[in-house]
Picture: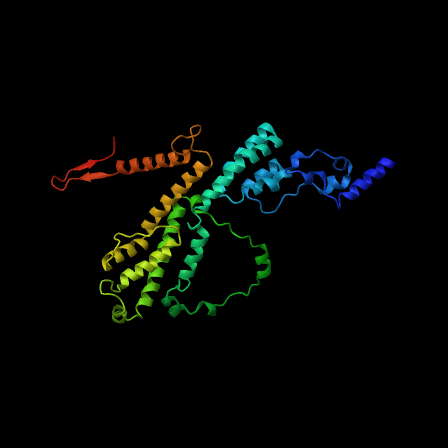
Length: 348
């Protein structure tokens, strides 16, 4: 009877005193206490509950090790999704081969230092735009554009005048259930997604240049030149480029500049590059490849024991590009204007 009272008293103390598990850095370090073994309330209310709206990788961690889920997923949350998958694969492999304790030791001693190096690398590219930032800027610079043609309104009337059935929409419930979309870094995007980002940035630059031009149209150039030295006249094309280049620098991309001392013609050429979708795609894709390789080096994927000169991802992308180049030349033809002969470039 006395032992039962002592056990009940121990269960009551757990409500106000920290349990033994709280004295350890990790749950697997604590041994099972008498309270954990005999108190029904501890077993009933301390079972892990699956959180809502888990990602694919978070669900894999929870299904394998629900007891340490909160601590494990905290180690990866600041990384891109493709890196999270890489580290989760390594953690779960160690978990299935050697058990929970060995997997947590492996995470703390091997994986965590690698994730910290990856976070420092990402900090060096903090100015590189992500998809959410570009989308917000693109919507801001295109809000004034009307997607409908004026002829439509002339012929059919204003859309607000169309008869339609009244519907009810619960805005408060929609806001409550709205899940914020996670922004994706440039390093996570595929080729077609990078091309879409380049298209939006080129349109942003075009809208920005039109805004700068409308400001310059209100200036008196003759009055401005009187206030400047003769060897440094006010050239609106050059000044407009400088403003546009400063704006482009905010995206972490070095703007084009053919000459150090520009003329009106060279400034317009550089502005046209900033408004070019192809120019933006080439720069963004080059930065993405550099970021990928930098992260691979930080994670130990480029070493004498792994891949000595480049990561496997870099090698695979290079081989895919070589195959695309080969298919392009194979389908091409050479035409001799003098003899009008046509020769196939492909290897038969």
